[in-house]
Length: 317
Image (cartoon, rainbow, N blue to C red; front, side, top):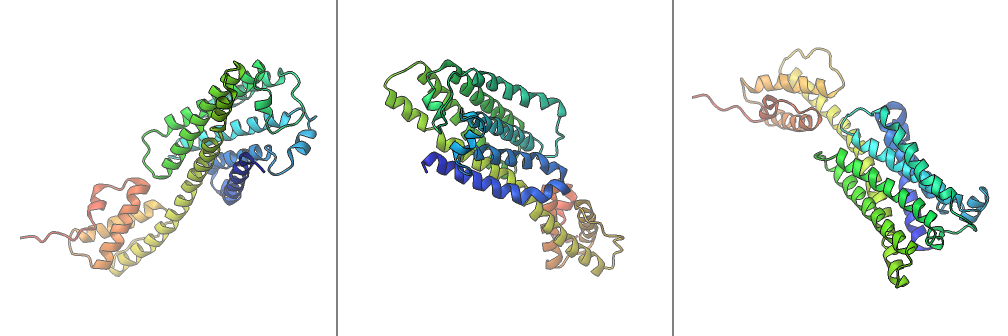
């Protein structure tokens, strides 16, 4: 197993784990489906590299003419497109169905030059390098890499200015993927032009693997981190809601029927704030209110009156 296959296997394992972990949320949370489709498509793309099924056997099913290379890039482009759409909708934005045409258009754009490549066989994991002197191969691989750069640009533009820390992994991953794709286009151009010395050109080509596969892993982990944080935050909110309910009832307040969302937690925090405006809270109540308001700030931008309420009241002269 060479180092390219090693990176592919690592990325495949990471994506499989994330896909399986997120599978239950696909049914319960429709907003998670784009992210799940991204990791699922990524698994299919890396399966085409030959790390799961031997490449010769896999490509043999399709005639032994390196069709798996095309399938790999089709699945990869699909995965990147769903990744971009998922990342752009993480803040609650709605998915626009009008953009669906972009994906088939990109797939068609590099499929046509692939079909035109003469004598694509026999099966080889170095298909790109072996045929890099052919203009049709240059068009096929360069258009594919250009599509990846375009998708990463749209991803980065769509999440510009967003502050949650999980976006850092997605941004770094997207920049790495885009940089690797541009580097590959340069390499392909130098190869088709037969630029010498060949050793230096090949050395440039080796620079593609680490940032590309590393970027895929970082972006996938960043996407999965949102689901983990959301789930953890939901558990914390539930615990805080119970504590706020207990604090309110201990003070003799009628809190009504308790709900099970962030707005009910906010309502309970406001009731405890009303008490803090007239009398001093004990240390436990102040701690609960402080934790609740900080969490609510992240969830729903709680008003200043709630954020300030965790402080003890100022004594009146």
